[in-house]
Length: 95
Image 1 (tube, rainbow, N blue to C red):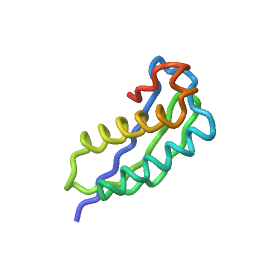
Image 2: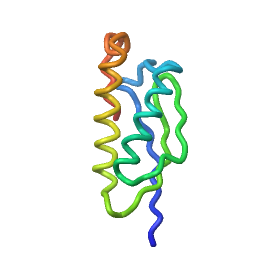
Image 3: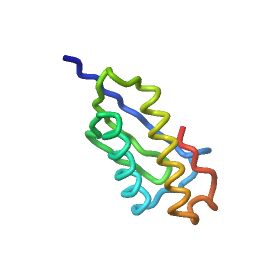
């Protein structure tokens, strides 16, 4: 039995203040969905206007790189679609 943990810090491009409370709540829902697709568990998430921190427990069945790529891609794409006001502030590519 394996227990793998990942502590991720995803920041906005140029660390611009982009996220508000609603955006952070939506990001948490998206991150939980992506984690469940990878049979992972989002243990904790918190964030500020320019970054989010994630603590994830995942299985060795999936690579951490594919999990991170999916977390970044899906969250960025959905947030841009749902919140066009955020997209106009700056590019929100999470790195």
